[in-house]
Structure formats: structure tokens, C-alpha cells
Length: 304
Image (cartoon, rainbow, N blue to C red):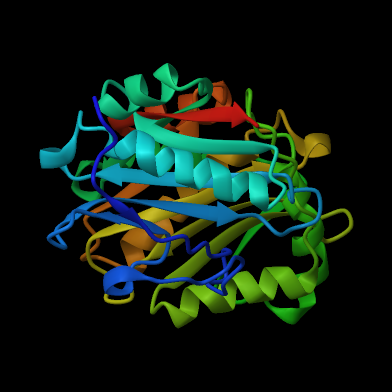
């Protein structure tokens, strides 16, 4: 089959939205690699995210879409070639891409040398389906030597330092075959992340377990709620420092988060979570609270 009649406009952005590559053209305001037929109709697009954090400069993340009417005509391959060329020009050694399990994207990536690296299962807990007995039992479990604290938005000043330190609880989360190394957190980054969520008009809730022996944070759970308190909230992560694991703190914090959002956001429809297939501990917690699978995705990688 001959090469498809498409136009590719190189334009790559970094996570902050600032251009990290030459800007030749951006058709219809699309940032990335838009592909169009000669008549101007959109055929597809590819977006390449360039990681800039220390230790991640070798990574790029690809998001590629082809209009259903244009599939099996070579548009995806044309866009992929342009995206990989841009990644190489930027000195990237690894490109990742995500596809829903069982969808055409899986076969497309596999046929072009990408290999599966990380499976993610997406789940939802309907707020109307929360079992009061299960929630109450989790909240009532004793955790001697620990207490729970919570806040909305930016972490309080008195907890900022220990909260930033507690972020290393996520450093060993299962990443399976992804070549990803967690970036270090400090107080400035913690505050900046919370402020970015607020600028989007959303509400960040945090629950933390505090070690009463020294007042340091042993673990935390984060959840983001739409600004109007409706729709679904999104779990951003639950982590416990290695030295505090095995005490049921993750289950306790998640139970308190569910209780908190039910109290403060009575119109919220549900809670969403995505969990790595290898994270059996958190998957078991979610299952016990009644989170039900909605779909599964697989993240693929290609070494350049």
C-alpha cells in the first residue's frame, strides 16, 4: 500500500506546556503531530511528552490517535514514524505508550516492536454502594502509636517537611518493566503540585498517618474532587513508608478518606482508582471496600 496522503506538523511540548522542540505549525491549535488529509479533514494526531526531571531525560511518552474512518490506511504508522524521529532528535532512548486491553491499539503497538511493561486496572467505588459495616470496621481497627490527620489543598506549614519526606513511600511502587525512576520530592514541589490542582478548580484532600513517637508522617492518601463536588473523585495515590508497613495503615487511611469525602461531598458519585497489576496489597484493599473494575490498560515501551 502506498504512503497515505497526510501532512505531519512537528511540534512537541514538555509537561508544563512550553515548547520543547521546533514549532513549525500547529494545525487547528493541536499541539503535537497532527495528521490531515489534503482536504483538511483530521486523520489523527500524535502527542509526545518529553520528561525533563533529573534522571528522566531519556524518556518520552507517546499518545497516538487515528480517526476510526482512517484506520488501516497507514496513518498510524506515518504518525508513529514522525513521533519516533522527533524522540530520537531529542536524545530520548525509551518511548512509552498506553493502550486499552483488547483494543486495536494493543495489536498496533505490539506489531511495531513495543513490548508490554505495566498493566493497570481501573476501578470505581459508587458512593451509594459503600458498605457502612465494612467502612466502620476498618475505621475501628486499633493502630497503637499512630493518629490520623487530614487537610484540604496545600499541606500545613507544620507538616510540610515531614510530608515531603513521606513521599518516598511511593518510590518502590510496582512499575514492572517501565524504565522509570521516581523524582525526589521537596517542600516546594509538594506545594506546587497542590497549587496546580487548585488552579484547575479542583479540590485536593489528603489523609496522613502520623507516628506519635516523633510526629513524623508514616503514610498518606490523596484524592482529588471536582470543584463543584459532583461527578467522581480520583485517587492520586496511597503510600506507607517501608518502616511502617504491616500495620494496616494503608487500609485505615483509605477508609478515613472514604468517610471524609462522604461527609464533605454528599453529591459525589463515586471514587476512581487505577492500580498496577503487581500492587497486590492495594488491589486487595480496594476489593474489600467494593471497588469494581471498569477497564484495564497496558503500558508499552520501545527502546530506541
